[in-house]
Image (cartoon, rainbow, N blue to C red; front, side):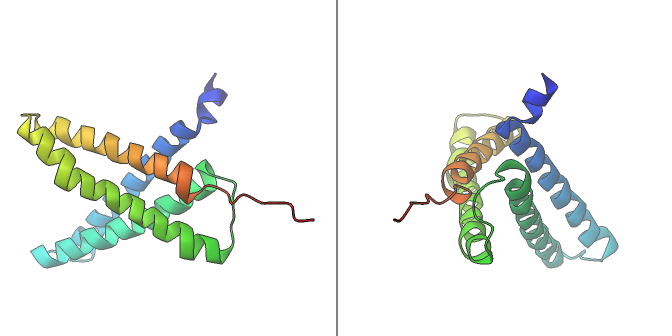
Length: 144
């Protein structure tokens, strides 16, 4: 039973997302508390750097642990998959900021519940994009 859960792609996706979140959280505190990024501007710089590093880490965690097949050429990973992953994550964030949060706020949903719904919808968008577009192996045709 536990092996079946562990082998489930959605379960691995959620665990990997949790690891990426922890990386982001660790980095933001490290930049601000330990490296002295303590002005409003530097805190935002720390936020951007933390997000980018956690995005790259999550990309490779997903690539290695969740979507294990496909092409591993430098061209495919760096020039195609990683930019598509950034676009997918960016789209999810934009939808949360400009559509989901304002709409749920207009409905009177509390900010905490609103954020949870936004995170779940954003994760769903990322999962579908990752599964169907970003990490999907190319169709190989047999040429004779």
